[in-house]
Amino acid sequence: MTIAIYPGTFDPITRGHEDLVRRACLLFDQLILAVAISRSKSTWFDLQERMSIAQAVFQDEPKVRILAFEGLLVDTMRKAQASVVIRGVRSLTDFDYEVPMAGMNRKMLPGMETIFLLPADDLAHVSGSLVREIAKMGGPFEPFVPQAVVPWVKEKREAALKSQAKPSS
Image (cartoon, rainbow, N blue to C red; front, side, top):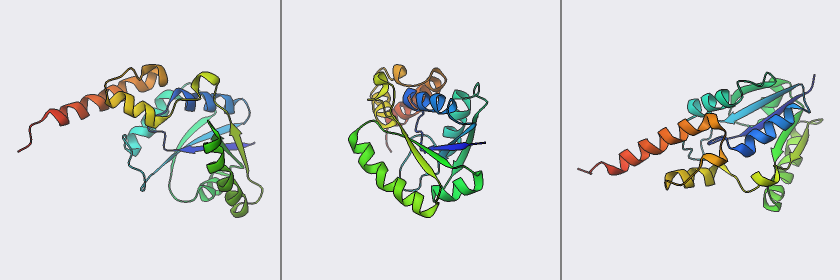
């Protein structure tokens, strides 16, 4: 059985993420969506919210397992008995960032492979940070996230707007 891991913060899951997960499920026996516990990166959604969103998006996909992780990816891979890392690459900048990381991971865990997947053409411009910015500014973010994500983003946006509207004491 070949187990692959797709790591990321998924803040929030976009249609691009969903596309890569569903395509990777065609290639592997099991896909672990590894949601990063990010200490260095400030996330809009907390870990539990990001885990719940992932569960909602992939509830219909029996090959997907959602897992939180912290620290070195290779340690998580060992524990999960995964041999493949999936990375989405939207641009040469992404590729330039990912290649050295793939090499270091392979040094630390010989035998592991990194597979770079390109997003569908219509999703190559989508990122979680752009979705967050559009949503925060009241723009139409819905085309860029799976339907299950929409209520989460709307709720987060409403809460942010309410906190901005409160008069300071």
